[in-house]
Structures are given as structure tokens and as C-alpha cells.
Length: 227
Image (tube, rainbow, N blue to C red; front, top):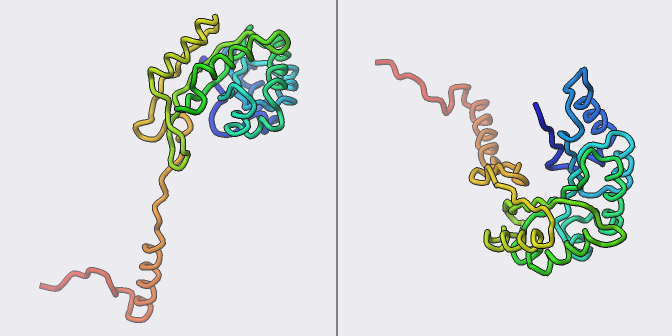
């Protein structure tokens, strides 16, 4: 193991103590012995625990941003109502004083006609270059992996490229994540299974048990007919 990323379903900074214990184990020379630069924690923005992490075990930090303004992020990331963007950005700026890298990675899920316009990109530029809370950062654009009833769709590839170009033209390092596993609903954000309704099967089994109790254990079974 050379790199570890704490990212996925669940907020690690709301499970703080076990998360820190795991991080320390990864960094311990007598355990995995990884460099702090090679361990990344992703958070939606639990501001008090970002500050706490900077003192306890400051690994590389990624932030699930997904929106360029508070009104939009309140919808996509409800935690934003408690810790709005300027508070989050200020916390990221404080974290950089202790981080193993000189930048924060911002994850940005690309949603068609929702958060993917050039204007949204320009709002992001304004946010990260703000004279008070602006910070050195990198953007990782993530094509949305759809799931039932989300009501959202993935941005088209040309739109993602155009969005990335606006950021890069402003001098911001920007990458686009390659999607893997979406053909079998196993990509990022799709870790769910389809549940088959087995109610009728259970009802038939209960009925069969009643008949077997009444007519004998062999009722309904295929038995060999003597030749």
C-alpha cells in the first residue's frame, strides 16, 4: 500500500476519534509507515474538526465542494447551512499552515444544467482567489454517476472540458476524474444494490408449510415413482 484515501459514503470527521486512530496507524513507522503526503482525508466541511485535525494528524485534505455559492451548496450539501463557504474556506486556509502539501484539493461533481456553467466556474475562481479566504488549491472535476430518483444527470463531456478550461485559464490546476465501474452501478456514489421484493415468495413458502403440516412433509415435493 503506497497511498490511502479516506473518501466515499460517510463523513469521516463526524466519526472523529476512530478516524484519527486509523490515520495514526497508517503513519506509524511500526505499522504502515506512510508519508502524510500519501494519506488523504475527504470531508464535506465539518469546520471545527478540520481545525482539530490540523493539530492531531494533518494529512492531505480534500473537500467535497460541489457548488460555487451558498444557495446552491445548501441544496447539494446540507452541512453548508451550518458551515457556509466563507467559514469553510477560512478553515481550509488555517489547515494549510500544518498540511503536508501546499494546496487543498476541491472535489466538484459535475451536474448537467445545475452547477456546470461558465458563470459557476467564475464564481469558484472568485471564491478561491478572495483576498481574505482565498487559498492555493486544485480542482478535481467528477462526472456525476447517476442513481435512481436523484433527479440529476451528468454534465456532457464538452461542458466538463469547457468548465475545466475556465478554471485553468485562471491559473488553477484542474483535473477530470476518470469514471470506472459505472457500467455495473459500482462507480463512486453508486455503492447500492437492487432489492428484489420477495413478499410473494415468502407468502408461498408460508402456504406450503401449512399444507405440509396438514397433508404431510412430502406434500408438494417431487418424489420418485417406482418403476
